[in-house]
Image (cartoon, rainbow, N blue to C red):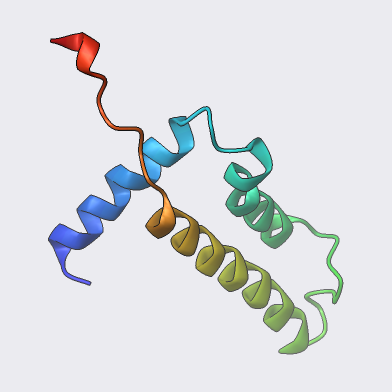
Length: 84
């Protein structure tokens, strides 16, 4: 993805977050993954070398793939004609 595509995806992501038609749980998926990553309580503790880090990486990457797919499928509401 080039810089223009990344910028477009970013603006589309923020429109996605502000859209009231999108359920809150879908918007919070990425935030929950980051909180899991930062939390000292994990499915596999980080003190277990490699495995402890892989579960964090798996949760973050799954949330990132989910959010990218959701934002790509997102169709913003067309501008209303009453604003003329």
